Length: 543
Ligand code: VG1
Ligand code: CO
Image (cartoon, rainbow, N blue to C red; front, side, top):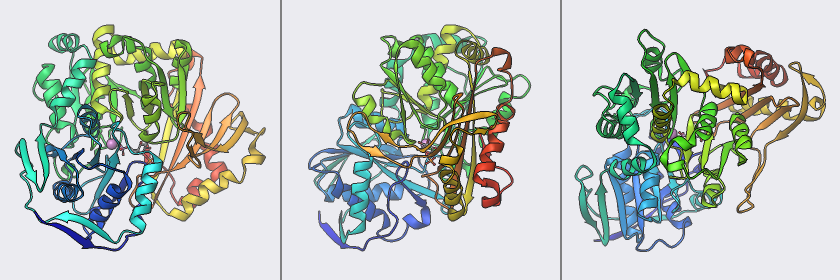
């Protein structure tokens, strides 16, 4: 088999963002574009000769093409083995699971997560290291540096392999194993949760719905929820993965998962509803006429961790991303656990989990997970909730309300202004930054501003520093206004405004979050001129 050395030139802008390199499919389809990034990754990650690479994706358009390209390049670059999911499918948490279980050198995950898919939409690729987690910034920056002076890549003159048949193939001197994408992951879930208790609950009056949104979790949810746990057929909605996600936007929130939301807020609503995103790492949890914010979900899971067999030995600590509400901090304090505040993106949790400092992690963006893998994990969160419901024999709404009574309620919301002008977005943040001194000690939104800063994080394990991770206005009563620019978008800029206010008084826990946060929302616009600068009178998405 012949190794080819193909001449190329650098492309601009191949710097991985919050979660890998995400661009329009048309950008990835340019000759050499994907190859440049893959070769740069191989050049940056060290000595993998003879080792294993895991490859898989969320099944979106271009997934199969990219996988065939990667397999040939992996062979030409000296990997010993590639493990790839059948049909090119591996959810992000399943890829993390497979990397860890088979002690692979690393993995390439093909996904643009919740971004729409299809020939005119988005594609993405990211490298995960041997612990199963997203490459840390030191690695992504090394990859980026390689993309800037690449002049050739290595590939093999070989036929495409049959991705649809489980089995072993040879590509040059390299072995390719096409694996069942669900089996290893399902086995891991069974080791963590009380499947018998959940099965018993599902065999009774309890009713649930899971919306896979035509994305990658369909096969996983069908095998686990309908198969292993015996939920009736049809419990999994939109369970066939499609290359264009059925034309939808597989983002499990109140705006995009409207089919499920209508069911859960309709007549005869099920007891439990959940949805996952394009690549299966996000989750939304709903009860009958009840929405659980992701920040509260993390706190509830932490407070009830002993319901699940996999966590009955106790949890080491909790980590949340900075914009995530402090609800989990209160649980950590009550349980005597350490709580860490990291920048946005799952890559920052890896070191904490590897060092056994934390067991549970979460982000406000519908991401929850634990040290069972090194990615956030949508179905894991769903199974954790089902396990808690089976043990506590109570409704989702009661469990959350009782949690607020005990710990207080962190009213929380995120307002996204998507696809705005990049300069205007930068100015929004700069406006706030330039008032750091004048705001401090002053009264705003009927509160006193305690401090303002650009969030900076020093990793307590390796000492690495990540700066400019969000502009913060912090109030004396614990309330917060935070502005951040998204690092996952593919067109224009997205401004994220995060709002949080703590309410200890249980008689005031029944408000709508937008009402409870109204003065902070107004203050945020007043300080930043967000609406005027972006020319928008309201956010694109409110969660
Ligand atoms: C967003 C979320 C962040 C999440 C990231 C990847 O990033 O805010 O919390 O980790 O997406 O999630 P940003 O930079 O756009 O705010 V996923 O499900 O796209 O892999
Ligand atoms: Co995702």
